[in-house]
Picture 1 (cartoon, rainbow, N blue to C red):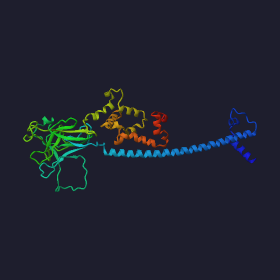
Picture 2: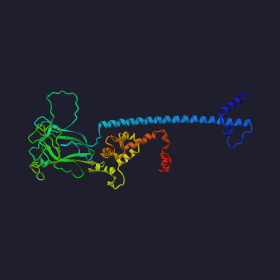
Picture 3: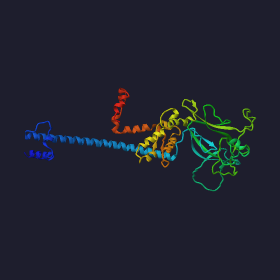
Picture 4: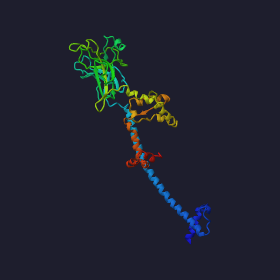
Length: 419
């Protein structure tokens, strides 16, 4: 009897504010006995207890799943932190260099821009032209030397001097359209994505299958001085900015002339200044060679100017800018400072630089545009897909080999319709 009153009081406390009609189904008849009423109440209590147990199980499952997602997010965050560290390291190192060969462009401070990029620029130098034991080679010294231990006093040693043009007995206007006097000689080291580079003396044109890097005149030391190597001076040389205009000598650049007997003449002519060309080419894995020049950077033009390909669309930079305008105004500056490019197309020469410049034109001058272009960006989408696949919440969307073989491509739409 005591238990009976306990349950009755408990039911009254829970359902005191609820009418009997809300406890019983509306379409059921009104209870005709106290037993029916107690039975209905107890049934509701049991159902409530069952629902509570189920809710606790669901909450526990959600907590477990949340823990898995949290772990996956932490792994993803760690991966992103590693990538950001790599981006920063690459930015500190400067633009990524081509893996192909290098060459020196004598007399200039910039590379041709036909698929080549500058490694560094600096000053032409070498041993003094009167040094009997000096080195014969010309050097291209960088503008920003670094030092180890040193003693700042002249001692017994080899010496490196700056280099000068020695064309004073020539009509320089005829050769260069300007008078270089005896000014200092600049230089730069260039890296090309092509697989082979050669300097061809006696020609200012490349042979079939080769791409011209630059052409000019074959130069060396004077015939009466100590022997030097032959180098190709650019046909449009510059004077070193900030260099000395005094006749200080040092390493010297002279024209070289053909001298018949025993040199075969013709085709060569005694006293005629020799030309030169620096040429490069691609060699495919099957040994076939192809010549690629302007195509290295002109192929990008279709991405930024689709009308060149008769495509009625805006350029890729405009697409990026329109997407940016859809973002919250407070986030746009941060987004522009962290533009990440990916995919094989982004590997074309000059793409990242061209995209940066075009975005800077569209944005205000005070906005800083920064492009992150890691060498592995061809596979970036696969890296992102692998990270997504690690999430336990994504496992239900996995497609097995057996499923694909059974249903074909349509399985993608069946599995991923909610994504």
